[in-house]
Amino acid sequence: MIPRLALALLAAPCSLAAQADWAQLSPTQLPPALSDHVLMADVRGALLFGGDNPTTGLSSDTWRFDGTNWTQLQPINKPSARMRHAGTYDRARNRFVVFGGSTSLAGGLMNDTWEFDGNDWKQITTTQAPSARNDHAMCYDTVGRRILLYGGRTATGDAQDTWSYDGTNWTQITTTASPPGRRDHGLAFDPFRGVALTYGGFYGSGLNVRQDTWEFDGTNWAQRMPTQVPGNRVGYGMVFDELRARTVMFSGYAAPSQPDETWEWDGNNWTLQSVLSKPTGRSGHAMTYDFVRGRSLLYGGWDTGHNAETWVYGTATPARFTTYGTACSGSGGTPVLALVPGKLPWIGDTHEVTIGPIVANAPVLMFLGFSDTNWGAFTLPLPLTTLGATGCSLLASPDLAGVAITTGTAATWSLPIPSTATLVGTKYYLQALVVDAAANTFGAAFSDGGSSEIGRR
Image 1 (cartoon, one colour):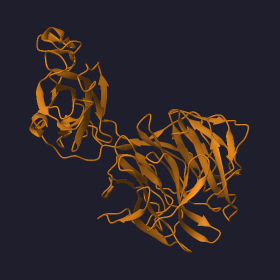
Image 2 (spheres, rainbow, N blue to C red):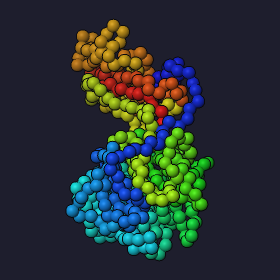
Image 3 (cartoon, helix red, strand yellow):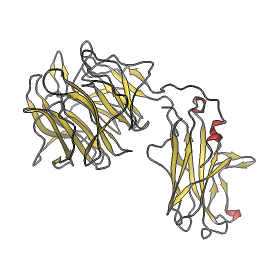
């Protein structure tokens, strides 16, 4: 490990506030003012379907957002107009999936399953399915490669069942523990920890609201007991921010108000964020995570009335890690650098990468430098063939060095980064040296390079 002090010397400490913030966008074309719609995202942007408009009623329209503008799509087939349905994007099958909802404020519960392939909608006939419902929640489980559904309002009351959908059929998941029944809650999946999160929701009759936190690990539910919670909350928007490794919750109804609060869950506790700008407090809005642009997207909702606003939430100074150059092979394979999921170089966190494959239990040295173009009088990349490392090159200036932890045929290197605001934007470069006597006459294999930039959440 490279000493924490090495980076701390680059800047003086100062107090930190949350970096992520909201920004309103101004598209030239917009969907109508909506509430109780769904918003889902793929590599092309976001897809909006359905919802309630105070003038025209329930919608069956499909809209695409490319990051800048909204465009109404004209599929040949489409689900019937509805509200309070749930939807998510199936990454493995490249399909948007919508389930259930209602045909009116008063009822008309449905349990149909629809998929959108980017061009047209298709109703999927399954041998079994959750009962007809609205105000349920769905998310995509990237670990199990399936869609998860939990809760909602059925004809017999608030549901507490958990279901999965694999593209062919729905399967009810039997759990030994479960959150009590609820509706109008959210569901977000953390791919780094492999759990789905839900919070709050209405229950029973009237305005009974929960404020409990539960996580589903793919097999069972467990209640979490954080020291701070967002309070009674329903009808909020909630997504997992994959870049910042946080679940983001915004606003919702907390009787008798709609607080314009942004909360984040880090896997242990909820934290109220200090933001410079934000949407008005609202409920019935929809949120999704734009994983291409690394930001959360919000559309519509009800504040003092239905609105047609587009907002994004994220950091202006993201952490980054990319690989570059070419590794040279050793007797155990060609060692390459790979980011440990969720371990980008954020201030106040630990940057972690793996190196492999390597010869079993080989010592690994990690170089950290502040240039990928020169090392003193030498120009990078610097071929090392003349030293006996045939086909190898020095890709990062070896200004600092540390030992990685080897386990079998792979190694892990970590760098704790101080909570120092002036480190934000600092770039550094990595390359691993694997001690391998059989690799060449030099006795080492070299990894590809890793370009890093320190960010602030």
